[in-house]
Image (cartoon, rainbow, N blue to C red; front, side, top):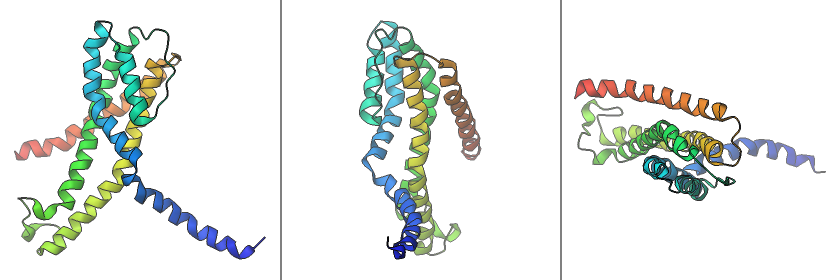
Length: 204
């Protein structure tokens, strides 16, 4: 065994973790996950009337999760009213997931594209008064949002997967436990969104 290789291995471990963080925004799975977070809300709302008339609401929602999240769910013999319950119960989580995902995308765009913004007055801006300084500071913020966004989206997708497996799969046990955490997260995120929006409303 060549002991001289051990320090090199220990040195590369942190770099590997950093590499994962840096690559995550550019992986295909990240963009598929984003597509699911944005589509889950309208598809779920569409499935409410579809389920009421006995349509394939459960099959549509399972297919969406399978194609965009890679979630394989055993199809039950009959989805029954749980397809309707899933479409209704998942709506709050789908809403906050779409809002927060959209917010992160917006934050990345407006910060990286700071020179293109109509309100880019650098005299009173972070990094100002020069455009180069202001753009550097805002671009750093945009990169930070870009690196954090995939992990936030992973969290939302994991909760949505939990609801899909619980309500639309063959195993129907533990529905209360399945629902409690996603609903709690949706409530906290909804409250946070309202608190963040209030200053903007007062300024308007």
